View 1 (cartoon, rainbow, N blue to C red):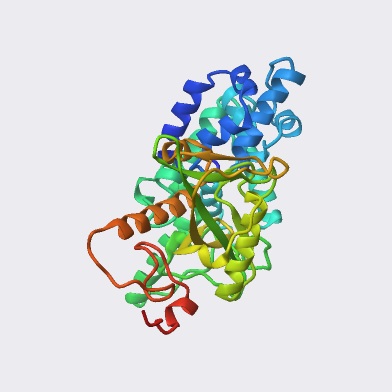
View 2: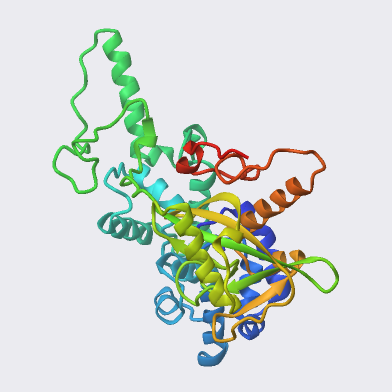
Amino acid sequence: MLQQTQVATVIDYYNRWMQKWPTLQALAQASLEEVNELWAGLGYYSRGKRLQEAARKVVSELAGRMPRTAEDLQKLLPGVGRYTAGAIASISYGQATGVVDGNVIRVLCRLRCIGADSSSPAVIDRLWDMANVLVDRSRPGDFNQALMELGATVCVPKAPLCGECPVKQHCQAWRRVEKELAFASQNLFGKPLPVPDVEDCVGDCPLCPPATEPWDSSLGVTNFPRKASKKPPRVMRTATCVLERRGCHGAPEYLIVQRPSSGLLAGLWEFPSLPLAQDLQEEKEREELADHLQAWMGRPVAGKGLQFIGEVIHIFSHIHQTYVVYSLHLDGDVTLDPALSPSRWVTEDEFHASAVSTAMKKVLKAHKKQCRKESSPVKSSKRKRGAGSACPGTQLSLRTFLRAPTAP
C-alpha cells in the first residue's frame, strides 16, 4: 500500500484490510472483487491484485511459508520487486540487505553528491551497491527503516533540515555548501582562495552532474538528486454514460459494467464508457456512444436522447483523462446481454460500496449536481451544450466554450 501512496492515506486502508483479512490464508480465500472494493481509492489497482495472488501462491504452493530472503521473495512472489523484497527480508527476517526507495535515493545522492539522473539504471545499480555496503549487519531492519525515516523527515526534497541531520558531517553536499560559504567569506576579505580538495571530482564521472547542468549555489544540497524531465502524460478522451432507471423501491439505480481483467483499472466497475478519438465532433461523439450503449441494452439508442452533463477531468500518473459525461433515463426494465462483460444495476450506496475508481465517483457526482440543478425551483432558460449546460464543478472543452450559444 505504501508504494506510490502517502502514509497518511494508507493508515485507514491498512487497518480495514487487516481487520478483514488478518492472515495470508484469509486473504487467499478472498475474491478479487472484494480486494478491489477495499482497495478502491488507493490507485494503482494492480498492487492489490498482485498482493492477493502472492497470498494464494504462498498458501497453495509454498505450504503457507513466506520466502525469507530478498532473492526468493522477488523470484517467487508476484508483485514483489527489488525494494519490497529488501524491506521484507531485512525488517521481518533480519537479512543484511539494503533497500532503495525514493527517500533513500535522496539521502544517498546528497551524501555522495551524485548528480547524474537518479532514475537511470546505472545510477540505481550504484545506489543499491551503496545501500548494501552501508547496511548495519547486526540490525539491518532498524538501519533501513532509519535511513528511510531520515529521508522522510529530515533530508526532505525541499528545505531539508541540515542543521538537525545526524550524518551531516559525512554529507558531501552539505560540505560543499559549507565550502562555498567559506570561499565567499574569504573573498569578501580579500584572502586567496584555497586549492581545491583532492577529493573533489574533476574528471568525467558518470555519477556527477552533467556539464550542461552545473551546481546551482542557490539550491544548496537540493541540487541533489537530479531526475530526468518527466514525459508529458498521454491525453485521452472517453465518453461515459450514466444510465439511470427507477428501482423497485423508487430510488434511482445505475448500470455499471466491469472493466477487462488487464490494463488500466483492471477488474474495476464503471459506467458504460467508450474511448474517443481526439477532436471528434459532438454529433459523431454522440452516435458512437449511442451505438456502444445499444450493444449493452439490445435496443436502439438515439444519440439525440443523450443528455450532456459536462466534462470531468481525472489525472492518472501517466494519463490526462477527460470523461465526456452523458446521462440517459430509462423507462421500464432492460435485459442486459449476458455475452458481454459482467454488468449490474446498483443503488447509489451500492455504487460507492463497489470497486469503482475515484474517476467514476467524480462522474456520478457531476450527474447528481445536474439532477439537483434541474429539480431546483429557480427558473432558468434552457440551453444546449456549450451554452451553460454543464453542471458546476465540470470543465468545458475549448471547442465547446468557444461555440456560439444556440438561441432558445
